[in-house]
Length: 138
Image 1 (tube, rainbow, N blue to C red):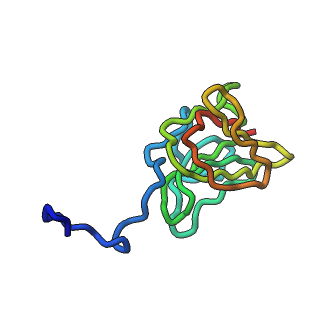
Image 2 (image 1 turned 180 degrees about the horizontal axis):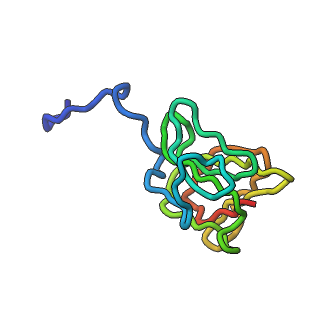
């Protein structure tokens, strides 16, 4: 209990915390119930089993661990209308996963479209998206 009389839940009783990307989105990427389709879309992460990035896609996750929930954005097309995909409110640590086939690299880019991370196919890892403004999926 705090000095002002308010209760504090124990750490064990609290829900998993978001890494800061709780309001994150990607311009032009709609919701879909299943990301395993030939389209660009996002869905909620399954907290029990995770949501694997489909083969032939580049994915970015708002959290690092499946147990934390959040969103997964799955890109089937390299760019949106010939331009990089625009990130909104990505201000914390998330995960990337390049499941592209045929050797296609994906790129996480800064404000000037400069490459921050060159993601080789078959590569995944955590990343602090604060400096990221764009992604190019292949």
